[in-house]
Length: 124
Image 1: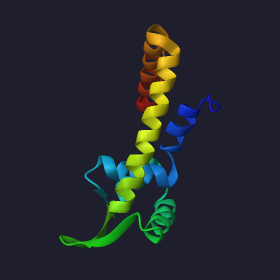
Image 2: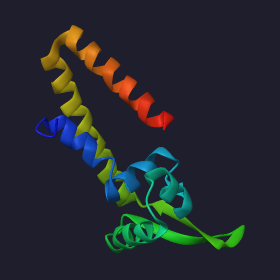
Image 3: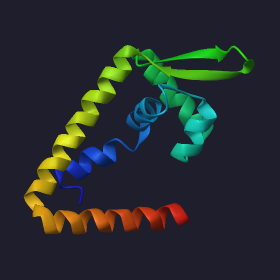
Image 4: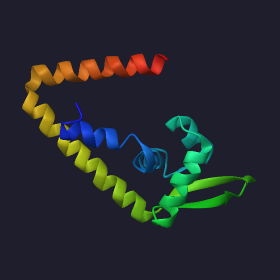
């Protein structure tokens, strides 16, 4: 399905820097790097690389946790929040167009199948 624009956009939101920004936006604009690593299923070294680039781009900040100085809290900046909202809106528009094209019956089947595949992936 990579030729379908909505699928490409959705896949893009689930990897690397976009996933990190999306995760932060979905979690009160903050997270610990270890949580990002766990949820993205990538190494802490990969997370460090992603965070370094996002911080350089002004999309996140990293600050010591006031309650545990050994921990770092990653926060989404206003610019990062604007960027991820723009990306989310583009993905939503693409999904709406795709589902409208499919029509009610096929759109319902598509969603049912996606849910089933997601359940299978989460059970592993």
